[in-house]
Amino acid sequence: MSRILIAEDEARISSFMEKGLKAAGFATIVAETGPDALEHGVSGGVDLIVLDIGLPGFDGYEVLRRLRLSGATVPVIILTARTSAEDTLASLEGGANDYMPKPFRFDELLARIRLRMADNRPVETVLGVGDVRLDLRTRRATIEGREIELSAREFALAEEFMRNPDRVLSREQLLSRVWGYDFDPGSNVVDVYVGYLRGKLGAGRIETVRGMGYRLR
Image 1 (cartoon, rainbow, N blue to C red):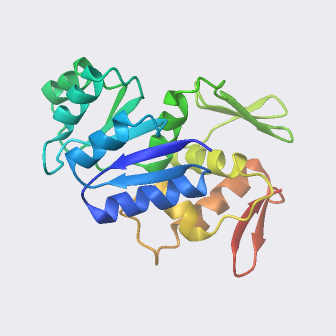
Image 2 (image 1 turned 180 degrees about the vertical axis):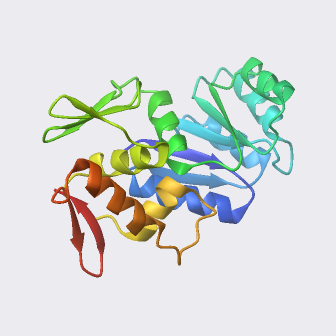
């Protein structure tokens, strides 16, 4: 099982990422300070690091600098509220593999993690369940070869279902993975968008499991 280091000092955000990544099949380690993040990073025991810049002890830039000086090649995704072009450039020139601004959508973070995993496993670019296909690179959806129009959020929801065929996904799981860490747990937005998807993919494809959530058949 691939292990991901979450270097983040805000407990709400690290807990959100940890729950989502575990649900996606990853093992996780959380580091709340720069020194702890560096220690785990150079140990060789992690496959990828999600690194916040604003860490106590020393910041994420210093973690990244020392990590690369040590010879560690583990992929690093910078996750930060600093969104200037200078910050982006500094991160990438400092040895980061990717950069995401906060606030972020979990499904996008998960996609970037899968693309950057160190073991170089082939990354799926087309998902298929039955006669439905999602092309993750072109963001196109087809049924029996016929293209259908999906909004960005509909596509993200369809992708989550198609990565978990025949598995029941709760409303809370879908909210956190598709709508991000600032979701409202009392919202009915999942039900609304499931309705939209049923209208485009076919009503019988997404099953309601009473009291539990939804399942792609």
